[in-house]
Image 1 (cartoon, rainbow over the protein chains, first blue to last red):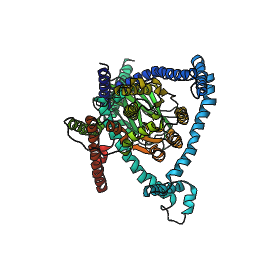
Image 2: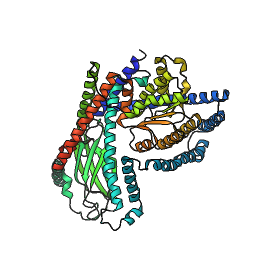
Image 3: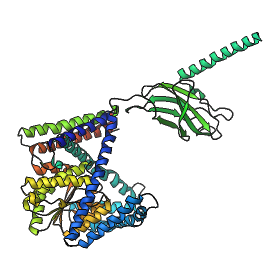
Image 4: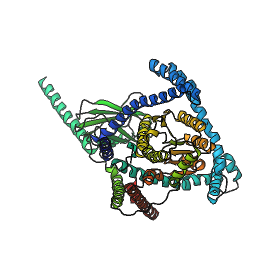
Length: 212
Length: 404
C-alpha cells in the first residue's frame, strides 16, 4: 500500500486536472485552484523540512569541524538575522526584515546576476570559434544579429537599399530561422510533456516516488 | 372637476400606453442604434448596438455586454466621458450600477461577473459626460448566466490529446507484448555511465541539480526521474553524490528517490540524507550556493536536468572552469544555447523527457518514447499540410488548430 496509495492519488489528480481543462462546469471549475492551494499548503510545511535539513547539515559540519566549517557559521548567522526579525516584526515596510531585504539581499542578488555578463563573454569566446561548419554558421549569425542590433550595423550598410540593411538581416534571422528552431524544440517538448504526464498518471513512470 | 379629472385620467392613460409601446418597440427592435445621430443640447448620444449574452465556456455567473461607441464618443462632439452599466431583475425598475467603462474606443466589452446562474437579468446602458449629463438609456435583456459542460473552443486540444495518448498507449501495449522497438540513440544519455565512471576513477563526487522549479513542473519530475537512474549508478560504483535543490518539496522527493535507488542496489548504508541538500528558494542565492559547492568539492561530473533560468550559464561556466564533465538537459529554449556552449552534452527539449525512460530500458517506458516519436511524425505531417493549405489560401486548418 505504501506504493499504491500515492499512485492512486496521482492517477485521480492527473485525470481530474485533464478533465477540468475541458469542462468549465462546477465542480471541475474549482478543482485547479483547490489543488493549487493544497500544493501551497504542503509546500509551506515542506519549507520547514528544508530549513531543518539545511540547519542540521551545517550544525553537524561545525560540530565535526569539517573542511570550510567557517562558512557554515556565516550561513547560520545569516539565516538567523533574516528569520528572527521576520518572525517577530513581520515583513512589511519599515521592519528590520524589509531593511535587510532591500539593503543586503537585493544588492547581493544583483551582484550574482551581473556576473552573468562575464560568463556570457567567456562562453561566447568558446562558442564563436569557427572550428566546424556549424560553429562557423553560429558565428556568422551571431555576428550579424549583434551588428544589426547596434546603430553601427545600419551605418555600415547604408549604401544598401531599404530592407537589405544589417538590421533587416538581424530581424530576418530572429523572425525566421531562430523562431523556427525554437518552435520545433517547443513542439517536441510539448509532446514530451504529454508522454511524461501519461507515464506518471498511469503509474508507468514511478521513479519520482523512489524506485523503478 | 370631475370632467377635468376624467380628461387628465384619459390623457395619462394615453401617455402611458404610448410610452409603454415605445419602450416595447425599443426592446424588440434592438433600440438604441436608433440614437446614432448627434443629439442636440448637452445630452450625449446613447451607446450604439448594445447586446448582451451569457459568457461562453465558463462556469456561469458572468454576462458579457458589448456596444459600439456613442456618436458623441470619439466622433461627433466628443463629450462622452464614460459608460455606466446598471443591472436589475426587472425591465423597468430596480437598476443598480455594476460598472463603468471609460470612453475613447470604438467597441466596448464589459463582463458582469457577479450574477446568479439561471436568474433573469436586464441591463441598462447609458453614456455620460463629464458634467454628469446622461444619454437615453438602452435597456437590454432579459438574459441569464449558465455554466457549460464543455469548452467549445478546445475540441482541437481534445482531439490532439486523444491522438497522442492513443499513439503512446498503443506502443506501450506493443512493448509489453515483447515487440522489439528501435529507439534512436541519444549521445548525452549514452555518456551517463562514462561520466559517473570518470568521477569514480578520479575519486570525486557527482553533482546533480534537478532545476530550480518545484515538483509541479514536468521538467522537475523528469529531472528527478533521471536522478533515480544516476543514483543507482553512483550507488553501484560507490561514488559520492551531492544533490543541491532549491525547493523543499523537491528535496523530499529527491531524498526518497536517492534512498530507494541505494536500497535497490543493495547499498543502503551508503545513503545519507545529507546527499540531498536544500539551499534556498532564491534563484541567485541558489546559484551562489551551487557555485560554492562546485569550487569546494570539485565534482568530476555535473548534471543539470530540469528547468533553469538566468542562472544556467553561471552554473555551467563554473562547472566548466573546474573541468567537470557536464551533461545538461532542459526544455527552456532561452537557456539551451548557454548549455550547448558550456556543457559537454545537452539534452534538448523532448530528450529530457525521454531520458528517464531511455536509461531504464523498461519496455513499457521505451514504448511510450516510440509513441511520442510517432506523434511527432503526425505533427510534421500536419505542419506540411498546413503549409500547403495556407499557400493555397485555405485557412481552416490553421484556424482549427489555433489554441484558445
